Image (tube, rainbow, N blue to C red; front, side):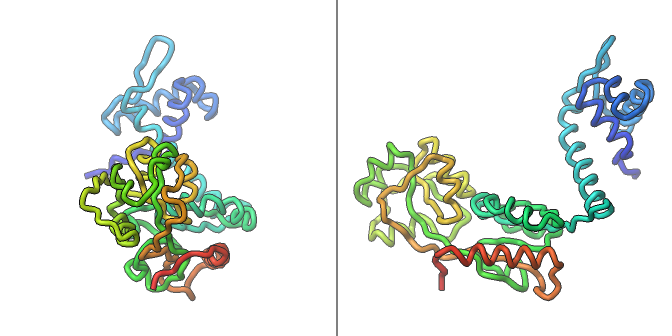
Length: 299
């Protein structure tokens, strides 16, 4: 069975024509005739066995399929262009592939991304995120930042930071929480993927949670977003969640309450001695930044 993947040239022509919704403007951009653009688009549609444009008397418009296809084509062309430029351009940037659990990337790496890339302009840092364990086994990465048992993800690892839990809510809800038992008057947002959660907070408070009402989220960022909409009370996981909490406009309930988490963040990789030079530089930079944080480390 022959591949349905179309030629790169057809995709370049489609991207230009779709972006402008004009064969004539695409022709000008690509230094082709409008007739040649139309021919390339027709060939692509025949390969895909689907119309990408609706032809009118003096114009073209994208079909629903064409509009849905465009972002993927643009991303693929951009990825190929960046990889080609990085590897074979006059200034050869060294690609570095780092994958991180979402909360750490959002709350920690985004703050330092500019500083690292400015300090190392010859390194092209490609940062991706994951939230579920199985996502970390997909694709190539020089380094991975995980939460929980690092041995599941890599042969070697470095401790980064731990976490402290405390309840947060919209200000008007937080103002109603005067004592631990007041938490039970509101819905509690629990993150299913964490070992430490509301039961640990109740244990710390010596509070029986028999009447607790839960709603569930698959990530702390989602839990904080739900709390921002007044759904209930979420748990911050400092310091990684600090940015998400501030962005959501949430404030602590029961000021001073902090509960140590059971797990932490680790940088993992297969073999320290085999790390490529850009990965070594990133590791040193990240460990130095994390060492400045006064964070809890579980036993």
